[in-house]
Image (cartoon, rainbow, N blue to C red; front, side, top):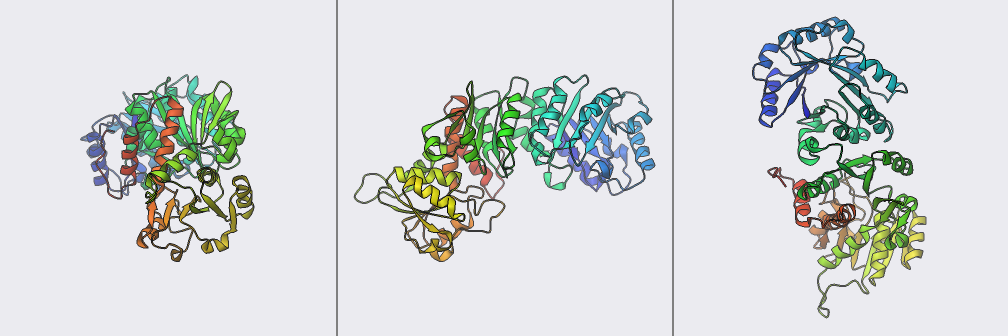
Length: 501
């Protein structure tokens, strides 16, 4: 079950969101009374309640906005209990001083906005002995493995428990609660209002992750990267899993640089059965894998990990997807029956994970490749591997080429105002392939189109590599048309109807 959190300053807006929650089928609503700018008319707020409602008045130390005295806060909570709320949220340090009344159910909560405390398990055991119907733990993750500590509380919970980590590192725990029997999780209609750090939207939990359908048997997949919030992988993979009726969920895991191996070992406790791998972990993923496909051995970078009996098997679906995209979109030569790369001059920007795949794929198909990278040592190493040319980043604009490929993260969200080349380099007729897909219309893409270049965005490659990943994860053919539709809708500047894909 998903509990919709409503926190607005004006009572009229609270009433409007209560109506919206009812229209969308909410089964539980939390009213954050600490958000209200003036004393609320509780009876009026409860007049048209569409489902059970929780009264919460959160202190600033716990992430709330209550500005009055503690005495006044407790008085408002008692008034809420009397007024007809079905639930009341009481912090662990005050619940013993508020007596139970009638049929009003009680949540005992603990919030820590700084960390996951060393004595979390002791705090939880003490809370379980307090007079409450549900125990709620909300702590702040400092590392990915903190998710596992809170989820572990749910495995043998003696009392119904909601436990998750706040912040973007904690996103997996908010969703995986359902796998371990939490009675509900929290969501908002608009994440931008700052109700709680890292809280997901109703749409994401309901439509993308299908939270209510997750159970103990649900298989788990995900994408690893840093940053990761911009990734569209959860949208397309979850849509494909749902389309094929598979009991599985695909999650975003923010894993900081240098923590990949620790993360992979720790999360086998769930277990996570497969990962898409993105910046900055592709090369490390190849290094730690127990089994490697030929492309990974050649390139030294992996964008896919699949759990096997021998450990993780590594694949590089960028290699095949990049070439398929280029050959599908390159204009046919007048003297050839099909598109080809043989003899074409390519300037490749970058020497990281995706650029490594591109360099090998381009050379294997006969292209003449020149590499420029901001770190010259990496460019020299990649050029030596692929028998390519190399130039300094500062002289990249002097290179003659038929095809320009951006294999860097320049232009990627949130740095959308950057381009890897000066506009004067973009001559009419030049083929420009930008592997960045969020946003699709990067500054490079916009300037290339404006100057008459033939442009290929990163969306086509992204969809192709994701489809190959999906088949590796599930052993089932990927619904390519559906995945394309989902990406196009997500990237549309216009809000399109939320069809059931």
